[in-house]
Amino acid sequence: MAVGLAAERAIPPISHPRRTSVRSWPMLDRAAFALCWATGVGLCLTAIAIVLFMLLKGVSYLQLGQFIHSPSPSLHQTQSGGFSDPILGTLLVTAIGTALAAPTGVALAAWLSEYRRPAGLARAVESAIEMMAGVPSVVLAIFGLLVFSQGFLGFLSQKAFNGTVTGQSFVTAGVVMSVLALPLVVASTREALAQLPDRLREASYALGKTRATTIRRVLLPAIRPSIASGIVLGMGRIIGDTAIITLVLGASLKNEAANGTPVLGALRGTGSTLTSYVYNNSPAGEGNSHEKAYAAAFVLLMLVLVLNGLVTFLTNDRPPREESRRSRLWAVVPWTR
Amino acid sequence: MMPPPVRRIALGREPYVAPPRAAGVAVAPAPARQRPSRAPSAGVRQRMAIESVWLAYGENWVVRDVSLPVRQGEVLALIGASGSGKTTLLRSLNRLTEVTSGAARAGRITLDGEEVHALEVNQLRRRVSMVFQQPNPFPMSIYDNVAYALVESPRHGTRRRRRTPELERAVADALRRAGLYDEVADDLDRSALRLSGGQQQRLCIARALAAEPEVLLLDEPCSALDPISTATIEDLIVELRDTVAIVIVTHNLQQAFRVADHVAFMHLGELVEYGTSDQVFDRPAQQRTREYVSGAFG
Image (cartoon, rainbow over all chains, first blue to last red; front, side):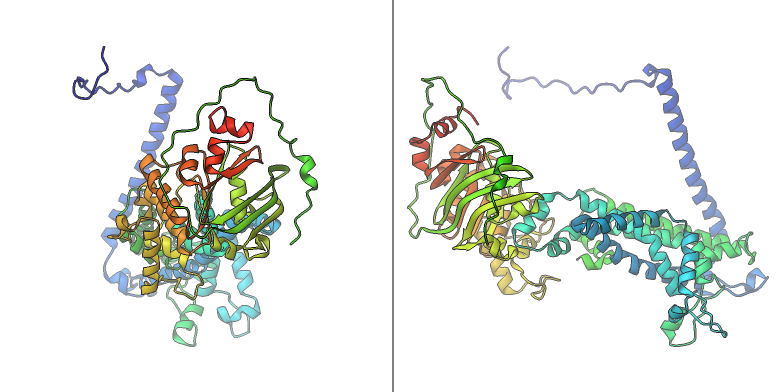
C-alpha cells in the first residue's frame, strides 16, 4: 500500500477497547473488590448520616436569636438564651491560635527544608514537631495549664484572691491551641517546599539573590495554596478541640472578661467555645439542654465543613482564573504576598 | 585568596590517554553552516580569566587544569561530550557550583582582575548572570519575573513592587533586549508560566539581562526549544555580545559554529583545544577535536 497522505487516507471509526469485566477476575480479587466497595459505601453512608442527622436536629432547634443571645443559666429552655458567646469564643481562640501557629509554622518549615543548619538541631526540631503532632490534646491542655498557672505568667490570665494564677484565659488557650495547629502548618509547607524544583532556587541564586530573599519572594509565593491549606487544616483542628477549652479556657457559660481595659480584659478572661457549649449542654453535660446542644453542634459542623471546602478549593489544581484566585488567597495568607 | 592545594588530584582519574585508532579513518567534512553575517565586534576586551582551574565534586576532579579567557565583544562556546565538565566549569564562573555540597576548586578565576572568591557572592552573581538549560521562570507575572531581578534591597519597594516609571522602563528595556517585548507588551501581568517554551527562555534571558550583568553564562539555552525559537535566541546571542561577555555551553556543534567567535573543546574534564570558531571546526589541531567535530564520537 502506498504511503497514506492526509488527503487520500480513509478515516477509520474510533473504537475504544471494552473494559474487562469483573467476572473474569480471580475469586480473591473479586472478594477484595467487593470489600473495598462495601467499605466505601459504608463510609459515605456514615458521612451522609452525620450531616443529615445534624441537619434535621439542628435546623429544627436552630433559631436566629441563638446567634445573638448570650447563654444564661436556667432550667427552662426558653430562658437559657443562645450561643453568641461560644461563637465569639470559637472565633477568638481560632484567631489567636492561627495568628501564632501560621507564621511560626511557615518559618519553621522554611528553615527545616531550606537551611537545615545546624543539622543536629534540625533533626531535633523535626522529631519535636512529630511528637507534638501525636500528643493527645488533653495532655497538651494540662501541660499548658501547668505552665500558665506559674506566677510570673499571671498577666496572661487572672489571679485569685489568694494570689494563685488560674492560667485560664483566651490568650493561654490560644497559645496551647497554636501548638496543636503548628505541626499541620509545618507539614504542608515543608512538603510543598520539598516538591519545588531546584532550578527555581538556582534561577534566583543566579540573579544574585540571597537564600532569604529567594524563600520570601519566590518559594513561599509559589506554594501559597499549600500554606493556606495547612493553615485551614490547623484552624479546623483548633475549632474542633474540646479538651483544651475545658481545661485552659475554663468552659464557663459566658465569656467573662477580667477586669481591666476592655479588649485586654476579654483576652485575659475566661469563656466558652462551641465545642465546650455542646459538651456542657449535651445529655452528658450539666446544662442538660440538648436542643441547644444540637443546634450548636450543627453550627460547629457547618463551620468545619466550610473550612474543609476551603481546603479543597485552595489545593485544587484545575487551571484557575488566576487573578481572582490570587486575590482570594491573598485574604488567607497576606504575608507571603 | 590563595588557591586551595591540589593534593586531591591523585584521588581522581588518570589523565586522559587517547585510545589508539585505526589508521586511515576518514574524517567527515565539517558541519554544514549558515553563519549569520556579522561585523567583528569593535572593542574586544578581556573580562574574566580562568587560570589553571580544577573543579571537583566529592572526590572526583571533573574539570582538570583549564585555562581560558572570557572576552567582552565575543562569544565563547564550550563544546564537548556529556560529562566533559563544560557545565561545571560554566557554573564555577559565578560560583553556582557552591550550591552543590562537596564542590571544591583549585586555580584562579578572576573578573576584571579580581579573584571571584574575594567578591561578595551575590554581587558576583549580579555581575555574572546565568541562563539555564530548562526555562525556569518564576511562578509570577512576566513583569514581576523581570522586576525581581531589578529590585535590590527591601527598602526599594519590594513589598508591593510599586510600579515606578523607572522600574517599568527598566523592565520593558530588558524585555526588549531579549526580543520578547513586542510579543508580551499587551499583557505584562500574565503569568510567565503561560508563555511558550521559547518565550519562557527569552524571559529568562531578559531576567538575566535586567540587572545589567557584565558576563552572561548560557547553559545549553536552546536544548529544550524548537528550531525557530532556537534561531531567535541565537540571533539574540550574537546581538548581545557587544554589551556583555557571553559564554555558552552547547551540545549542538552547528550552534557553536553559528554563534561563537571562539570555541573551547573539552573532553573528560580537560581542555583539548581552544581557538577561533573557524580554526576549531575547519582546521582542528588535535586528533580528538577532529573526531568530535566530525561526529566520530560524542
